[in-house]
Length: 235
Ligand code: DC
Image (cartoon, rainbow, N blue to C red; front, side, top):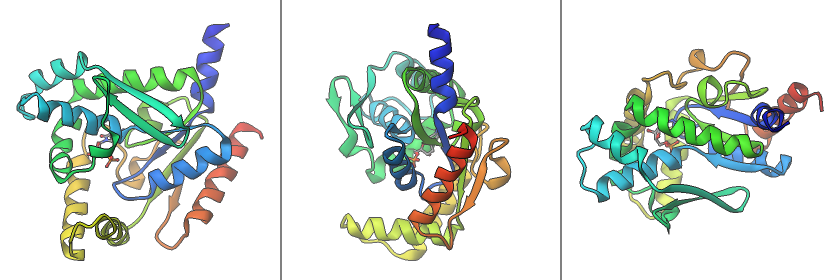
């Protein structure tokens, strides 16, 4: 009985993958709201591990030490609002401090360590097996929720993604130029392109709906994703 509930929860969950700034969070949140389920941005977990590594003064290139720290890390996710996942590190809500330039710089080093990925995938699956979620990341359809019936891959050119990211940076009061952000976007793609992650459309999970968001508004992307969910779940 319990087993059926777990597999149903994983199967009904929605997997969203795509490169940096492809719109996974905005689309994922809107989708979660429409389906009245939770939104889970797995990038936050990798970022929280990076923060823990920095705070513990562990060398991010020392894979063994980082793995040991992550395996024993008191890291929890909490939802007061289903669309706003909160990250609790050793009892402290660190959600607001996970997008600093220092974490941006280090997170790729942490997320490329296979044993770190194994540990986080295990924790992510445990959360999705309790109740269905919309989960966003780089390995969700291919690995974390391989059995999900609805898989979506969001794609966009580096230029369009950089333009979106530049808007966010300027809104948060961080002065940047388009060229700087474009360079950082391409660099992030290179660094994230390892370890069975889906960064490019030809790496998308089998059966995933690939949406090219370059010329689409959020509403159109969400509508396509919802139609895919309904078709996959016979709803
Ligand atoms: O989506 P994001 O920018 O918050 O992700 C932060 C980093 O974590 C990025 O380098 C990619 C990595 N990541 C990953 O490897 N696998 C995931 N499922 C989610 C994020």
